[in-house]
Length: 178
Image (cartoon, rainbow, N blue to C red):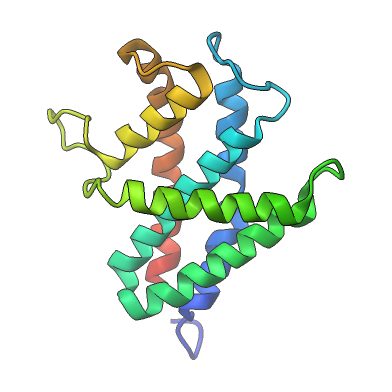
């Protein structure tokens, strides 16, 4: 090991927060290019909040599994504060940073409770997707972005989200194990 001390849970939260915002932003951009997208193609705040809430939840769950409850609390607090600060400082002047951060916290708390019902992240090979975290996330996004939970629309959304979620999971796992 190169360093004398191990990376703290709070430092890990900051490291994940450094790249987390890019995933919801790129996902929203890709989703807005779907032909049936019904949101604001120039920036859909409800969609962005939903995407941010998922990635925050996902990182939090991974931290709990890797770090345990005590360190997860430190990680989660730092992650949420750092992401909220990054959002607040990068917003267009037309948006109130206080209001957006409050909405993000509300959405995150709402989705923490909802997504906790889905224990499995992704299905095993040959297993049905319904009831997994990523499937239910895609369903929420599909309803919000396209007004539909039809399987054909879901497939389009899953095709966009699954690679991004996989990449986020790999990067987060590396940081959490540091």
